[in-house]
Length: 160
Image (cartoon, rainbow, N blue to C red; front, side, top):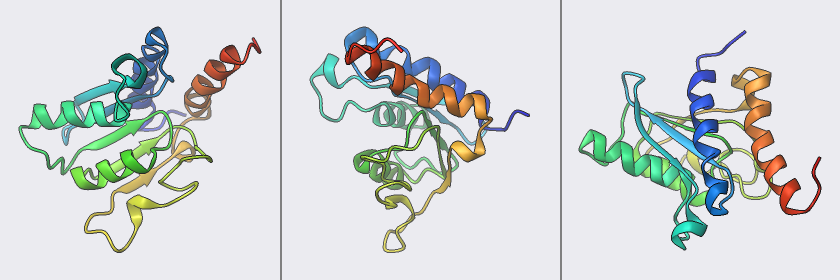
């Protein structure tokens, strides 16, 4: 049974597939406006741009802010293929997004539920709602997680 987050996650997955073309890790993000329309998209560009902030989430948030004409993205939803890192989780809080939806847990650097819970820290002035793989159809969650598994298997010389 499809969930309300499946379609936007599929868009983020499609966006993530652009990253390996320039040797970047396949992470994709989509920001939905209050009306549900796509307001910003992004994929990792760290290698291409030699930019440590070239994360999918930041690119998508920047695009959404330009589209909104404001840095406050109240009413917006950040959809990303993997659990955001500390930098991206902090950016989502600072942008005031209402919700973060991520497709796969990231036990090494995840800053939403896995390693830290930056976005729901009661000391901060804004706390987005969090939705994760448990809120997606199993096939969509598996596709999001599979992006990284497949990418790193190829890099390690393990075709499968």
